[in-house]
Length: 388
Image: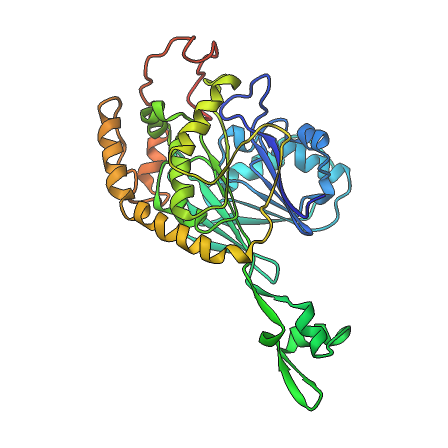
């Protein structure tokens, strides 16, 4: 079993379908297990995927629309039932503290859990910074307060067995050299840099409900695995902006500009039948020429293996992507103009991703919907504009 992988528990957005459960994602990162956005049915999906309650060490909620949090009561109660004794950190937008409290106490159960709540402010923040990884957040631009998450492993060094052997360094001395940076050997001093090579830390980002905004690019920067919502096809860009979402093409644009190694598309609108999801992949591929995974429930997506030899290639790719990044504001403005012909707008698509009063107010508005037939939606009604 991979030490670092994403287990996809659900890929639907506002409403589940016959083949797609509500959101839910479990990131296995060595000894840590991060559960992101557990929507309705997550507890059962964990059973099907072989993810146990004891493996969850952190829970990260991006916002409190139901498809991202209605599974929390079941998950927390299952953790209590299975007698999880370790402390579990739970991060969520600070403005939703009362919502989390109500969700946690939604029904009666013997609550033996040790939860460490980490309300996330409406500004960039670091939730954890240890030897294994740093967990960062950024506020996004949705119809309600929402945040994205970024996990960064510190850079390190990779020991070179041939160089160690040539200098007679073995056993416990290797560990001492790693800790102290130097060791005496054969009347001289061997420095760590002589017997090791730089090892780039891996990076992961989780970006759910948001319009295109600077914070999305910051979260995705130089990631090995980028999980990004792609609720709408590019043809429905006006709806995406109205509801505070990305199109698949915009997800591809974020991945390309950020130099991501692997892009996972998910959080699909119920308007698209399974056979229609291929168009979302094509939309993303038009902007991003890297590895694209069109997520399906119960998929396991490995974090790409370390590729230190690809540093130069990645740097060159980022230089090419920088050109895209430098013009993204103007292209976003053009998209705004095009979208404006179809639907009302709600401020700058690209400027401010802070959780302003304006964005919170906008969530109470009912955006106009483009007229579509049931055939356009694959026979699935849109439903109320609460979760997409």
